[in-house]
Length: 145
Image (cartoon, rainbow, N blue to C red):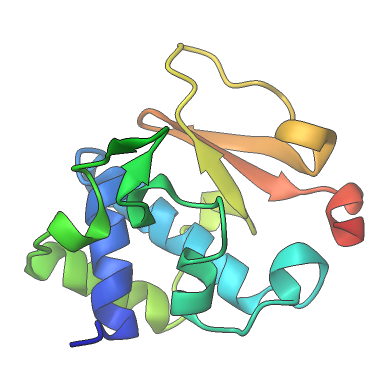
């Protein structure tokens, strides 16, 4: 049975940011939806769906069942979202975004107390840290991706 877009978003929220509190989970949901709705650059060429965004090659570790040739137990197929995750998915699908996040298209956990100023290739510029994740808004260079 294919998972609905809502269920996929709830699962990625849990998998990528389940321990980051409401703002951390909302931030991840916002990034996914920002990618769905961006009209230019690499993500703008995708089908504007949650499914296409999540399953774009090399973007989210949580959609991969294997990483570096080994089974990845932390994947969306093993996630069991609760009402909290489904409600945040509904919140994001309805068009809500965290206002301090801007139009962030990327996030990552640097496993250090500081965030680098630019996302790789300088396509993203640091905007905010929420929990363990650093978030990046697109720069002009992103339009050429």
